[in-house]
Amino acid sequence: MKTKIIAEITTSPIGVGTSLSRFVKTAIEEINKHPDIRVFHHPMGTVIEVDTLDQVFEVTKLAHEAVIKAGASRVITQIRIDDRRDKPRKMEDKLAAISNF
Image (cartoon, rainbow, N blue to C red; front, side):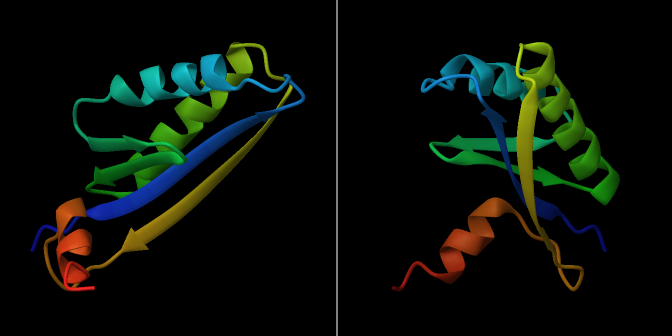
């Protein structure tokens, strides 16, 4: 059975001023380079849908490093991983499960 892992990534530079958009854009551009994953960007982070934990960690690492390369001396990156292995799934399944509320 092929399952999907859904993860949320938030990468935040520290000490770069009030506007973070150029750093966020850099992280988003790095994440978007990976055609083998599904991506949903939202105002507070990015949700990815992948096949393996290694993909989660690799994409997260690349986004984190992109922010440092963009000039941030300090970066905080948060990952939330939903790894459900009992059935195939996708991002939309999580929304459909709560659509009656």
